Length: 208
Ligand SMILES: N[C@@H](CCC(=O)N[C@@H](CS)C(=O)NCC(=O)O)C(=O)O
Image (cartoon, rainbow, N blue to C red; front, side, top):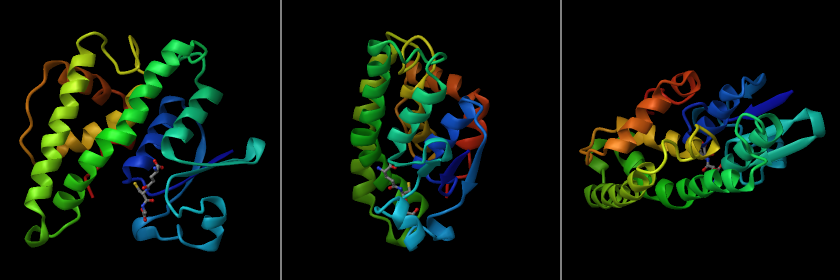
């Protein structure tokens, strides 16, 4: 059995829950982090010394994993090889490039905007930080738009793991009350992922 530790409104936990939904996996969820706490308890720190969610336990092989993208990669490698064509090194690397880009470029640009607009009282918001973050996100989404001129998904011709981390961040981007530059291909991709049941149930939650 798989156990996923984490609060369902976390962008990193959403990646794992959405991936599990796409693969139709059975799993237990232990809400942790944020209002649920637990993530600084010795029991949890023994699993993930970083004290962060998500964390995955796979009883099948006594495995404990943390880092959301790594958990997505693991679940995909174990249960999604065929549907996501992961045996093809080029297809796999194309997807993984966008997973790493989401973690290293897009998330650092978008997170301060999100925290300021959603988790900070209006009087305490840092307008300059929001403005800078939105500007950087626009530059990054221009890169994404150019990529999507050539292929419908970040994973290639079909939906795959390369779409999951960006998809979770894109939901925040498209749902925040900000002005956004319109982009045809990004919008078409976003409409396509928005029609997926796993995205609707695991990602499209009220921002909190
Ligand atoms: N790079 C890590 C980051 C994990 C992370 O920052 N998790 C946040 C939630 S998105 C967390 O645990 N924050 C503490 C909390 O929720 O209490 C990953 O991708 O899994």
